Image (cartoon, rainbow, N blue to C red; front, side, top):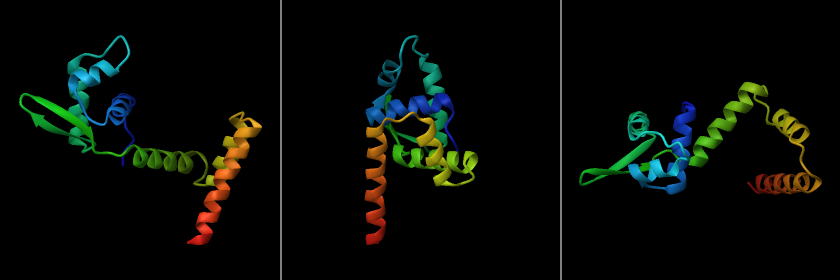
Length: 125
């Protein structure tokens, strides 16, 4: 899966949030200054061609919906970051993240709890 462009990612985030939307809904989701309808139409056409977005024709208008799941995209994007910047080592990423993210003690303890839960799940498999 290719990484979305910044504009595609922004539009996709609105579509993920709305779940389905008409062109007007998507334009309204953007902050001021809002992009032109033609700009969003061009992005949608590109994303339809990439099979990331689908639509249902309702008379003269289209109702758009995401075909790409947000979790799937995030997982793939995260894996690319780990591969490209951390020698494909999740442990190197975790080390960097916990050292550089300026996490509070509470946040670190929450992370430890999440990791412990995952360890227990893996042991059951």
